Length: 177
Length: 185
Image (cartoon, rainbow over all chains, first blue to last red; front, side):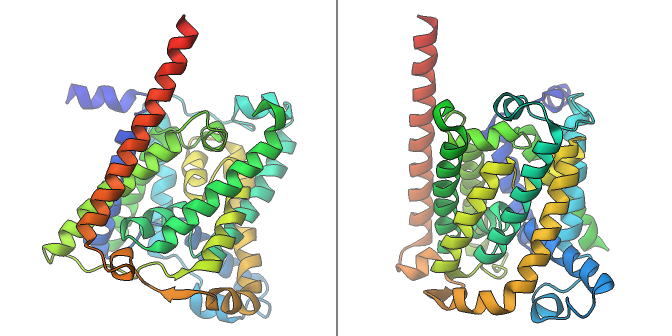
């Protein structure tokens, strides 16, 4: 029990251990809820909810009515849990802190400006969500959840994601690569 | 109600595992693309080995049936993946790690991240009717799995994937140790 407490207080676990924990979570999701883990889908439900209340005519289409209908879904609740899990992880290692610009490496490369970080992060998030939509899921919903069922789509996605991630990082970091 | 509680608890451990692996940090995500930190790769492949082995065993025992397998439509999976990688390298997160990072008090995750995903989802949903049917029609194999596609034994596929991953982990960790040796010399 003390050992467990010690582990819990650690800021970082071995990626092998943390990865195995997520593997068990993925199994339990199928066993207990007949569901797959995912993250990008809940934002599509959320966008539909907001869109259909603010601009009902515009958002009255095939996608928001049938493919990803508005409302709080199983994966929406899962994401609330993910948020709380991140909070618990940071609290347990006493690293919870409000920060405008959270990463030292980012500051070294792009400078200390947080609005610049927010702008790049915002644009990046838009691109991420559109990519996930086209591919049929994100790192969790397609790469992990599809991969664990041995769906070819997952491995194709992982390959493409690494290829363009490596190319983009190379362009952004240039000689600092 | 129990379903919701299960989702919440599973989500909690999902977020905890991402946070403890350090994947809620910009540099962890970006550095896997720069070949300087392989935590993302190690994490993902370990998750896959554990969940593949567990799920196929449970299925073999007749305790579960698989929920809808994510569809394979090669052009869409590739194009979506390419776009996704660009976003990941720029923002340093993916949707799941951004939500977990938001819980840590990182405002550059909470505000531009969650707003960006919602905006992206709105844009995607609006262009979906004119875009998705065309892309998903190219090389569409539906909800197929590798063992059925190539007529292979699923246990063999999982063992092969596990051995391949372990070999990759070995190469990565050996390279890192050699680098450390050089530094101490």
